[in-house]
Image 1 (tube, one colour):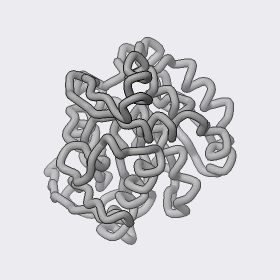
Image 2 (tube, helix red, strand yellow):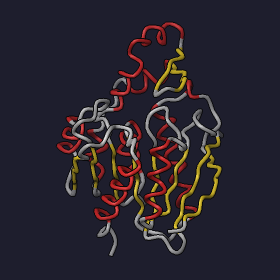
Image 3 (spheres, one colour):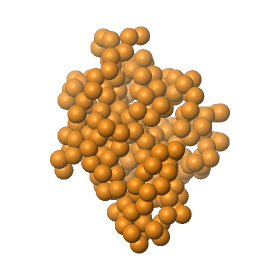
Image 4 (cartoon, rainbow, N blue to C red):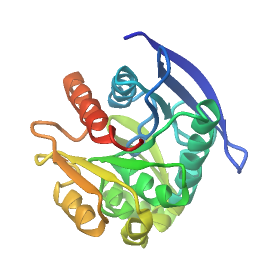
Length: 256
């Protein structure tokens, strides 16, 4: 299937402009999707690129974008908080809706930390028809383990520069403070729409028990698929194609 990529500039209420790419199938799409990438990744992270393309091949107009301070987006990642991530994801949904106002259903996807953000944002967005998480933690604070060894330095100096996923990232004190208390329980209780949890039993970054915890907190209709032989970052191209096919099959009856 022919795929069309369009670069987008995504405005946010705080004046930071985000960078995005709308990946579309030729012809009328069967739905639209927005992807919240993993922590400190980007829209150009290999798994995100492949997933967006695979979803487009399944017929979904799919937006992949950089959170503030990452990739090609404006802003400083050291200033990021859970709240700025929430705002960025809402801005991305606004932009997706502006480009495809009449396309349904609307899927909100989140990978890893992006999955936790998707759950937090979805109840605030009535146009979101369903949520899909991939290897999501059951609370935003789980990401703290990535920089636990630098927590004292961040608290003392206000920030610390470290390597996450092979890339240098500056983590600020505001992020640590913003993820300390929030849970997903209230958001899941308010979600009131279908949610699909995709998680690998062998995930060594976010244990599959997190998916079980989210599943227990979520309301029906809720679904869980164990991604056999898949790693946390969907490193193999065939795994992203598999995930896209699952999403298409699961979302087929979201609209009349």
